[in-house]
Length: 397
Image (cartoon, rainbow, N blue to C red; front, side, top):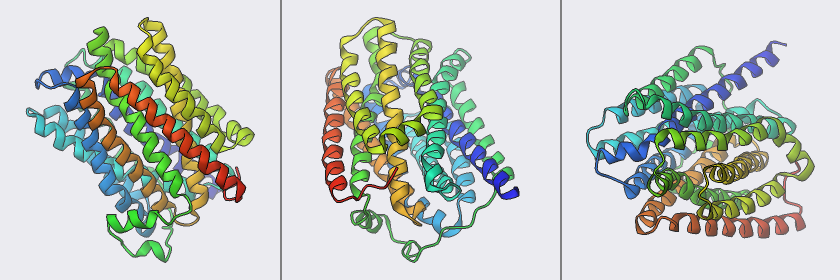
């Protein structure tokens, strides 16, 4: 009974951590175009700010994943939350563009010490049968944070353009303190191979030999396409339609609402009925079509509809991929989660940098290119799924 309560408490804290972390990240999204104007910067700068955060995640995610396998999850999660929160406060205090870049890099470092250990912790305390549901709940917490965050950010920007950064940082630090005081410690998952302490290059090379390598490629390509949307939507709505931070906040908040409901209450049933791979394929196709479709709508409510379709599709992909990788990883949950986040960060790092440059050339280019990338990801995943099904290598749902 005590063990059951402890697991429920741990899962609750993990969900709170992910929700507060990503609401803090999402909170600054609608104000960034206007904030960058005060630095005399535009699309390319926003792309690099998002990319440099992903660079921090890419470098440190494998390290965090391996350390969590060897030393446990809790301390790394607390450390990541504190670093993340402090970096966001520093971002609000920045007076030069290079300070924004440096602060955002450390936001990525903090995220690297949060996401893989949280995913690995969730895998530790759940059975394979529960894994899809647990990943769905964590995914819902991420989506809910992104959904509520921009709305809060748009509202708080009425106080001052800097205030949302201070609020986001304070909330994230509070999450770190809460985790330190309440989150139960779990026994480290130690494997012979995970204790080697390989560097980043060796870990990336090692990932090529894993049974879930193609899924990591899907994570990379998917993240690359999504980053085009995330890094340019606010700029597109600001410059093409002259939307205010409050307008953008409403679009992003509404768009995330259905995705949260699906992740929290429907996704496990979808996994059971169709399997994770079919959900991934269908969602990739819908995401590609809706991303390109944004270029052909101008009515406010149609924009909300298309972004809602896109958001719902993309919120299904991440927990489906996370579940498949987790089911395949066995005892190396920390390493697998670290590699998952590293490939996601690599895609998120390259995508925004390119998208910002494409946006400065022409506003429509990031959406067109992102749709092509997502379609490519669909065909890659479809080919692997057919091959894996023929060889009976796909994990059972």
